[in-house]
Amino acid sequence: MLKAVFPLSIGIFLSLANLAIPIYAAEPCDLQRVQFTPEKNSASNKSTGKFQATQVTLESEPGAPKSSSPTFNMPMQVQTKSGKICKLGEGIWESKEIYVNRGEDLVAGSECSGSECSLTFYALSDCAKRDSIPFAGPMRLEGGRFLMKGACEYLDDAKSKAYCSPAKIYDLVSDCKPKLNEKESLIWTRKIYGVEFATPSNILNPHTSQAKVTKP
Image (cartoon, rainbow, N blue to C red; front, side, top):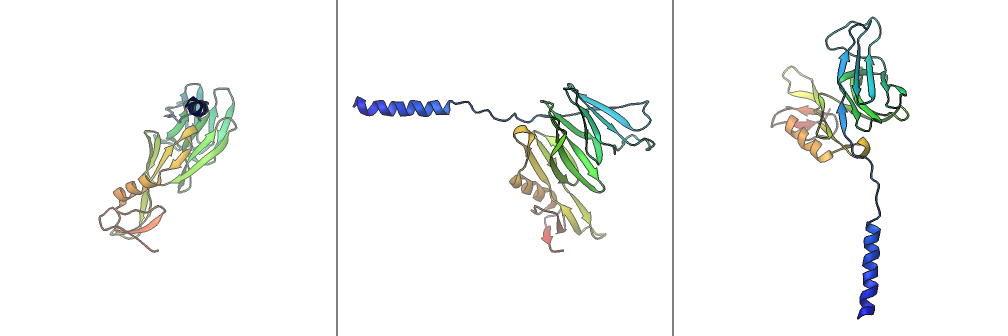
């Protein structure tokens, strides 16, 4: 009897020992919005924000008209906690949508070129672009996820026909890697537009209970 139990006990012990081996998971994502302050004596639109030891500077080209809601068309400059300088992007930055993670090794923001905008992620260790997600319409960070509402371009005066971009929900998983939540994105798209669709589509009667996807 003991001979039968003893090997079994060893097997259980070894199994538990294997489970006890530490698994070093990636750091969870915790992005923080950077608060910017305009520089009053700057010759152009220039704003600086800081999160902990990381400083972010946004600036427009010299001579650009100043406004209460400026656009910043020069590369975003980030001085990392180690003192290194990263110059990031080639589009137009939106100061309300710039984020740094608590580890201060990543920056994310809304970067636009022409009529197209993307949520871009840059690693500050090597100043390299890590991810880029095209989006349309309003975007916000809420509860560890980015919510992108989508938008429609109406094709007639009655607004019964439109070309629409769907709503998207991106969860921020380990190390701030954005992952599309397909199921919740479709549910939110239906709630907004009245019909489910996953890619930009022609929609008949958008924002109503009679909405449906149509062919071009």
